[in-house]
Picture 1 (cartoon, rainbow, N blue to C red):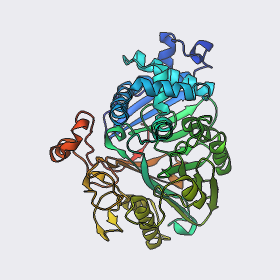
Picture 2: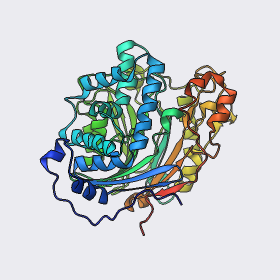
Picture 3: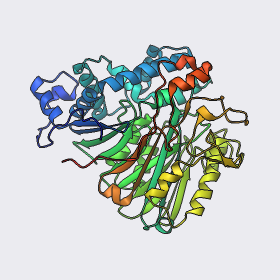
Picture 4: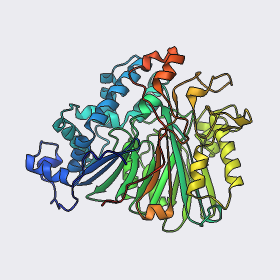
Length: 468
């Protein structure tokens, strides 16, 4: 069992937060004690589990106070990596996010982010609201606005492998969903938060999250409306509409306020800015229906079914998005996205009708390379390992890049109904990653020396654990 950092009772009832709280002014010491009495954190097997509840500012305060050190480290790493990869310092991107997002964030989420700032300050870590705004919108800024602005990439785009199955594809006829997250390990180390949010308005949310993001950013979630969801980012997509609403606002609103799959998709479409173009895999545990919602900037599609499956591997099945909005390929298995798409089809067909949580965990750890036609973890396997790939296959990217799948998450309808999920930190498999050993072999990545984490193989763990 993990070390319990802070656990308080959940019996305290708080009345509506005062105007000073909602506008981000410092609360009284008594108010802070009441807020923190409703929140708790525990650490287990590489994850941080965090429970927050109440009005916007107080939820933010709880999160900022209880994860101040981790948010501070996320900002430190983000600032360093972005300057190395773009030549621009933190202030440049903070100013850009302020210009783009200042008028596009609802008051509810402004208050929540200001609460995080206040909680961090109370814990001894100083950040500004503008920096908090940037940390929440860093995906919009670095991977969509910046490439459009300068016609060049800002380093690793996030990637992932995922599926959702239901009906006659699943062992019990109900939904099974699985996902692993991919990105450079230096930034990925900050995506180890599983947060349970009980808001004053809207649905309760249980999600994996990244740093101080008020949405998931890695995207694996359950909601009080009975919806579950995940996604894989559409590769080779860099379109962006600066007039639109940032994805961290739209995705959070969808989780918090959508009552159905259709409502969820409608919220994402509304004032879409193109950032984090994804193949969203969604399920409704009330009906057993699943969906694949593919959202580009100009094009989108929603397909639903009650029997079968959808998979995700960073290549869109929507030909309008693929051909008109990306530079991606559909059938070149040297490309990691395509190779994983093909491998998913092999696995889903081989296991059709038997898919359950146990098989889902096995499939997330799959190391079969369909191009090489053998077991060899690398950039083309469902459990990705850039650090083990020499890059000799065209399309592989940089040789031995320290990036890949650093987690795994699985849920089925029964678990979602019980408000629980399975999660594995350090990779979907048991290979693990040791930074010092890696850097000893690959000196080209010395620039990451004080930022690369260890990812020791961790066991699959259920969150949240039942409280005694």
